[in-house]
Each structure stands twice: as C-alpha cells, then as structure tokens.
Length: 83
Length: 341
Image (tube, rainbow over all chains, first blue to last red; front, side, top):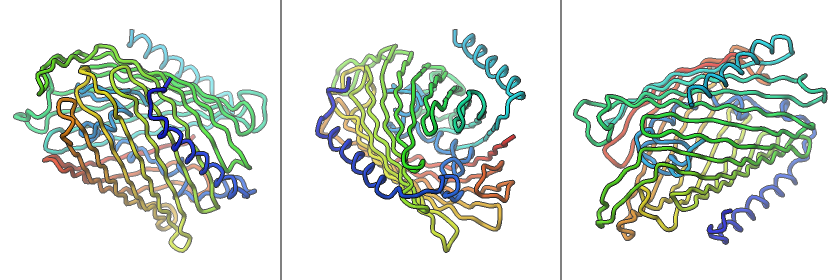
C-alpha cells in the first residue's frame, strides 16, 4: 500500500521501534501493576487536562505539518484529515 | 445525511447512558472552553467529552468495555474587520464542528480491540474517518503495543487558480487516504515512561507522509514532579502534482514540560514547544519557506481527590503565549474540568 515510500526510511524507522521494544522488554522486570507504579504527574491519563488538550487547536492553521492530523477550516487543502 | 447520522449516534449514546445505570460502570464527563487571539484571527473553542467504562459487560474477569464520545466546536473570526491575510470568502466567521465516537472492548486480560468513527464539518469542507485499533500489553502490563488503521475521506470546495510559474492549480473536490500508526508504551522503571510512535499516511492528492515521535517521562522524587520531553519528525516529500495548494513539507517539533505537585491536591505545569517547518513550493523547488514558532504555556489543576493513585475529578486553567517568525503571534486562555461518577 505504501510502496512508494523511501524503503530505507521505513526500514530504519521499524528497526528503531523494534530496538526500543527490546530495550523496554529488558527493563520490564516490574511485578507491580502499572496503577501502583505511576505518579499522577507522569500518567498520561491524568496529565492530559481538557484545558490543555484544546490549547493547541487554534494555531494549527499556521502550521501545515499539523494540518495532516486535523483539518483546516480556513479552506486550505488537507492531505489526510481525521483524528 | 450528516444531520441524520449525528442524531442517530447521539440517540444511541443517550440510550446507552440510560441503560448503564443498571451496570457497575464508571463514567466521565469533561469539558473546556478557550479563547485564542493573534494578529490574524481570534478563535473561540469549546469541547465536550463523555466516556463510559464497564467491567461487567462481558463475562471475562479482568477485561473492560469503553465507550467514548468527543465534540469540539471552533468559531474562527478575523482579528479585525480590515484583516485580509486569510480568506474567509465573504463570511463574518467560520464555524467548525468535530465529532468522534469510539468503542473498545477487552477480549482477554491485556488485549483490547476497538473501532472509531468521526467527522469534521466546516463551511468549505467536510471530512470523515473510521478505523480499527488494537492494544496488547506484555510483561505484567509494563509494555503496550498499539496498532491503528484508519480510512479518511474529505469533500471540499475546489480551488482553481494560476500558480507563480503559470501552471493552473485545480484542487479536487474529493480526497481519500489511509493511515497506519504503530505505537509503543513502556514502563522502563517505576519512575520512567517511554513512548514512541511511527505513522504512515497515504493521500490521493499529496505524497505519502511518514512521521516518527518519541517521548520520555521521568519522575524526579526529591521534587515530587515529572519532566516530559518529546520529539517528533514529519516528512511529506515527493512529487507535488498541481492539485494541492502547498509544496513538500519537512517539520520537527520539540516539547518539554514540567509537572509539579503542590500541596496535596494541586498540579502546576509549565511547558515549551518549538516547531520548525520547511516548505519547498511546487512552483520553485529551490526556494525554502521556513515557519518557526515558540509556544510557552502553563496550567494549574486542582484535583478533588487526595488519592493520587486514583482518577479524580478536577478543574484546570491554562494560559499560553504563541510566537512565530511571521508577523503573527498570539495568546490563549482556557478553562476546563472533568467529573467522574
């Protein structure tokens, strides 16, 4: 489906992800469940407040790279849209 | 068509909410309002979210079902009446509404499968998307792999104009695309979280996009606070056909935040985001248009529970300053909260 992509880039990226996965596995000798581990200042489900999540919305019209994760109401063409 | 779908979906959600009173469920409602203004636009934003977590919907111990709905409303107006740098096409303002629905079901302990559907409505374009996602935990739930597959569709007003090199640009009325995202979440230690994601997006009017992001969160025990550092790289390069309004894009984003516990129920956060984007226009690939921005922001949250290990209802306020290398730079303020019941 994505055969037109630069194959080297794809291979490199997948290699990095896989390496990080292995590193993560080696460090994962933690027997306590995650809910006991996390401090509230680290936990993604506790640090993303509604006020923070909307704060990045307004300025996206100026940043084309971020349009691909959203949608421009101002009429610019959007490469992907969604999310 | 859109109205019908919207009301059907909302009706289904109301029924589920009503029925859920007979199950042991945890529900959450969150909302926020914000205001942004720079030299070009002023934007009013409101969001509303609902989520329902049920642990007894299917008869497997240790799994749960999660239903979610999110709504976002943006009202965009020119910063002044003589503002001409953005084309509002004769309108006083632009309204944009976004809806997103999702359902995730645990099928085994540590394994979730989900579906999602959403759309965005605006005066010049409407986009919709749907997809599936899966999460798998490993090693006592310390490592999670996630996969998301998404289809995107956009209907927009076509633009027809002559570019700087004399070539005619005609943007299509319909755009289709696919996205695949692979993510990894890992507890490297009791005080360290590492996250990374890789994404590829294919679109009918643009070259393929790939992006790679990583984030580390480190708890600093002596200070009872955490530092969050993230980096993301984005590339949308290749042959630009005369069907899109901008050229190839390479961008990088760096973000650093500090989250500090204060007293027993407060969290103060300070953050900085740097964004850099290089665009090579189709009409002149030797030219590079660079966009750079600095965004400094801070939020204060109050949690109603003193138990930090549990989810808690809370209220929050945020203020930020956004600056770019162009003439535009603005301020943002927002207030929000969430309630668990």
